[in-house]
Amino acid sequence: MLNFVVCRVFESAVVVLIVSFVIYCLIGFMPGDPIDLMIASNPELTSEDSSRLKKLYGLDQPLVSRYWNWAQSALYGDFGYSRVYAQPVMDILWPRMGNTVLLMGLSLFFALAIAIPIGIFAAIRPNTKTDYLINLLCFAGISIPPFWLALLVIIFFSVTLSWFPAGGMETVGKGDLWDRISYMVLPLIVLTLHTAGGLTRFMRANMRQTLRQDYIRTARAKGANTYKVTLNHAFRNSMLPIITMIGISLGGVFSGALITETMFSWLGVGKTIFDAILGNDFNLALVGLLFATLMTLTGSFIADICQIAMDPRVSFASQDEK
Amino acid sequence: MRPAKHSINANRMFDRVLRHKLAAISAVVLLGLALLSCCAPLIERLLGVDHTDINLYNRFAGPSLTHVLGTDELGRDLFIRLLYGGRVSLSIAITAAIIASVFGTFVGLTAGYYGGWLDRFLMRFNDAFMALPLLPLLIVLAAIDLEKVGVPRSIAESDEISLYRIIIIVSMVSWNTVARLVRAETLALRESDFTRAAQSLGASSSTIIVRHILPNSSSPIIVATTLSVGYIILFESVLSFLGLGVQAPLTSWGHMLSNAQELIWSAPYLAILPGLMIFITVIACNFFGDGLQDAMDPRAT
Image (cartoon, rainbow over all chains, first blue to last red; front, side, top):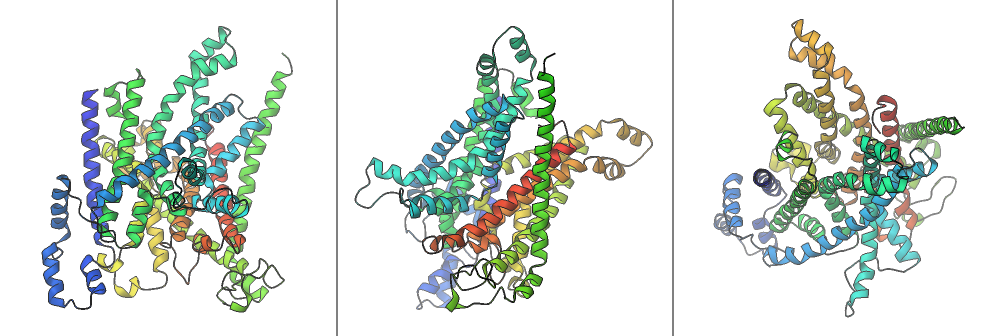
């Protein structure tokens, strides 16, 4: 167990290192640089000032050595300042991270609450009309562009019915629990539907595979009824792959969260990254992207550990072979 | 035996028909959309409208004989713009899907056939890739300055550059499903008798891969490519919607929605129609791919 955990931590660290380097270079390739932006906002700066400033901030050095300097100070917890907010990036990202985790966590919870029962329901009556209808709806959930779903939801619930606000976090000056919940309903609906289709299909396929196992046939032969077999024997065994699936799909859920947050002006990490990229806030974009990567990698790491802890059949040695 | 058996058979037939019917309908829908998009200039000529014509006196017009679906916020004909948008969306999706599956097939064949550390490295890379939050990375890729990575100015400032850029970006993130499926197939085929026979006859690795393994793993390649067309349309539409994909004067379905959020109060149908086209195309690709999978590989599902 310990061996496996150490291996995975090492592997994730390598991934983070590579990703951080790639992101650093990509951000470096974005149009303009911080000094150009300073010059644009202050006409008194001469070209000598600009080269002096470039030297001061190390912008005249090649990308690799700039990355090295940045990575060193990042390791000591210094992630620098945001250009637009003039605050340390961590002060901006921490509270927004809470909002994103809340949105993603709740939608995953609701998506599972839809996917597990419906997936099982479809799996125990394969190839019936109900099964097809569920399959159809799942495909619809997978195929619908999330930003368009958000538009439809806004048109229907905010413009036509005006039940819920079309975007934001809370009404200014109100901000009690109910008010906040009403702002959360629409983003949650969009992200949940975006996630649920794939999970339901996975749950169904997985449950059908479990129901074909020998021990299910044995339980049947001993006279257990469908519900007992499904709930006592098959259900528990088909829950394990779902954990892996959640781990894998976290990156996709984060991408969905970025769109949802942007559509509903939900102050989360996804929207922050998007705004930072568009607003040339290089440092905030860089650290935000790293944050998002760390979040999804940690999530899939936890999922792997859970799977191993819960499933006695998975030996740590065989995990390396996979 | 009671009629139970009969009902199972009837059910199975119903199943086949319905499943393949959905796939067949999807194929027809996709072909129809492709045909309509191809003929967009012709239809434009027939209706006597121009997809770039701006007419501010005729904004938000309802459907009429010349403007079949009415006009948008600048008075342009919505129907023709949808067709031109489809041209761009579909050609991006098909080109990117082909590039991605060629690359994915190459990776899958190499990893599966040679095995060992190369396989482990490629598959680890694939796993790590899948866990990443791809959309923000795509947004950064779409935002980079091409001149800074050494693309000459004349190319970096041409009209079509947004098209090439988005094709490259989306194909970079769509190869991994193909790679995984081809690798699995190659692993099985590598141990098969005909591979052994070819090896013992002295065929080189590259000959075996190209002549024996590649043709036999064509069905997962075809299925995964079909499915990835749908995902690529989604990716492209999200990026274009966010203003980072296709740029004017070109337009795609996602691009047509880029200022839809401001129009939901005044003209909600402008926000609904292009999205509906994306939805129909993507769901048709998914159904068609699923049907192909059923038809080609009865072991799955």
